[in-house]
Picture 1 (cartoon, rainbow over the protein chains, first blue to last red):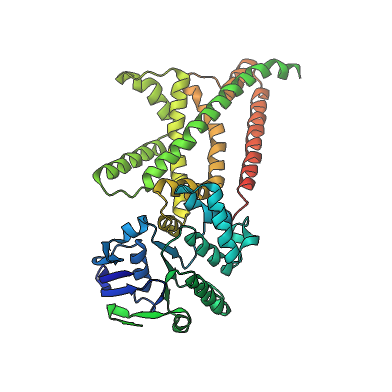
Picture 2: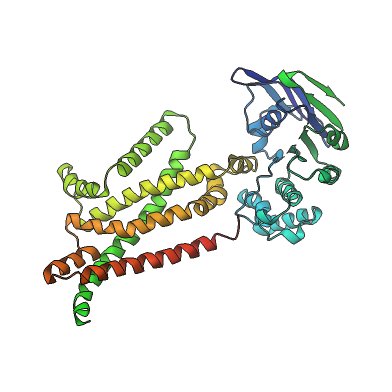
Length: 215
Length: 218
């Protein structure tokens, strides 16, 4: 379980997050919802260690920690809104690059990548380059790339916004299938309907930092 | 025809100098420019990092802000005054590498700026080090982005190599001039122009090929 306490963040004079508490339960899917500009993505970036919080504390499985520490331990995986696949690398290389750089043997990394591609219906795209993929395929590659490092918690930033609206259900199914494998997931979305489809718990981030956390 | 045959060996000797300057400059300036550029985009906030960036910026300012001809003169005739002595050819290569690396560094810097921040962030969350991110993700993209501008500079280099005459070295253009004044005919200079055009044509074709080899992704 990952707990964040009293997280605050301001950009200049603007308070974005004000003493926010977040509890991420193991093997559950937490949806972070709220209007545009409420700080949902900022919160996700703080959890991912991409944006430092001004104040607040992290506790992971009862131990005090930090976003940077969690990243070093490979706890967190991120699926970006724009996916951010590496355009110069094939789908397979996108997935195997980080594991091989971390010392996983090339054969083992490829085997793991192929099994992820198999699960995510990407076998036929192994040698394709990102520019040639559909939005849904890109997202699945981004998920496979994150899963290849065996994170404990997978974060998604607005997973439906870059895709065709009629793909909403298939993204929800995808998140449900990742959950079935025991993954803890955090989904940032402005889409309440989508949040209801995927979430076990919902955290509403309102503008100026007021919040409510309900199961 | 027999006149052309009689001056051709001198011109080809000049071509050797031109090509020597050309290749040695590229071999030195392409990686040096990349190092300078990577230094300029690093984000360290300590005093050492800031001083390093200031020095690199000053270097680029000096070498882009003054004529290459002047730099050649300073390096060959000026540096000996403070005890640094180069032979003519080394002075040329040293100056050309520093001059071209400054231009290349600026071109690369533009390329780095064109790679989206999200690429760096994606690499960060994948726990890649700064160096791994540059090596496997960013620099390959930068090279593709900068190819057209680099092609321009490379063609300029062929022509800039004629500046070596200022410290007494003979290149293709110099050989042509000598023959023209001695024999009072423009034929050698026409030949010189043709040889330059052939060299730049080959480079243009090579550039297309390299660009094509990078076209496997968009």
